[in-house]
Length: 393
Ligand code: DNO
Image (cartoon, rainbow, N blue to C red; front, top):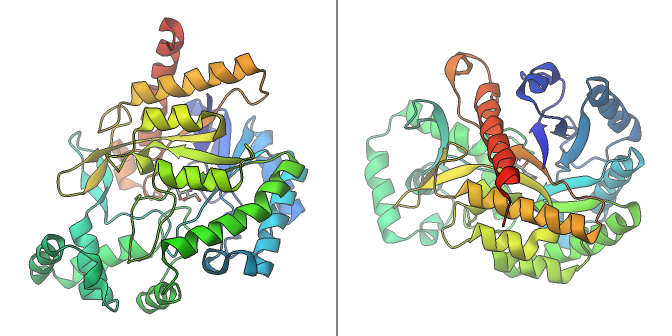
């Protein structure tokens, strides 16, 4: 695998020099400063690439080109937004980049309710608690008919919990949910997010799937023409939030997306942390089934809890057997090598990491501090090297 690292650009408190010490050779980044759906100009892409290469790295994956809400709502009718997305694809292709990640989650990208959960090792982890989320949606955001989207147990647990919450706790929860975690396209206000959610009213899973299919029918033929590999990121978490549909959460969802555009340019960002938050996703089976379409891997673990909560675990701990996952990915690489495919090595990155040691005192991007990811990458690298020694069969 190509050991890569997410870098948020020149503003990232973790510098390219730091990343070199972590031992990564690939950089995963985007023009994060242009997140509003405008086309990325060639010159800016070229400049960013030169900056990365001047430090001895390769820009392995673009994560992500943002997909504006209009495309998720209106599909092929969102003409200016699709044209801008296609222009950004062209800008990346002319610079020689090959792999582009994007997501199709309406309104919110990845979402957590807690950013400083004390993990068993004493480090700080990100966590999602459905009761907190429900409480925010029903009692703070006061989304119309929100209560109909939750089961009775979750709703009454939220009611009970929120009785004792003070203003500071509510503000912290709201900040975590709607301000946009690193890499998310938007920061919302309470009124702004409510209006945006309402703008999706009536779309439903079928409507969102139709939008995705129409969007894929625009970008996958173009990717084939430009020699690009597109890879949709799974929903994180892989279930509905705010009553909105999510259509890239399960193997069945991905089958539908792939059968709509069978070209291998229509691929997946295999995010073990997102997919692994659902017990019914069998990750190793998914790697076997979708292997040729895995253009990028996010390796991360979650511990699933009985009430539907999950927190981000150590990379080799948690509910997913990471050694089995890495073994399956290496087997896919062997299969590609035997087939003579040029893209044998799958770019991977240690996805997120705990906040550890003196990083706790620093200003960091939640999930993207240096030391936790350095540890994650070191552990994953160890697994890969060991498996290559003993064989992947
Ligand atoms: C979170 C990331 C996501 C991801 C996007 C892809 O840590 O995995 O922000 O980059 O969903 O478009």
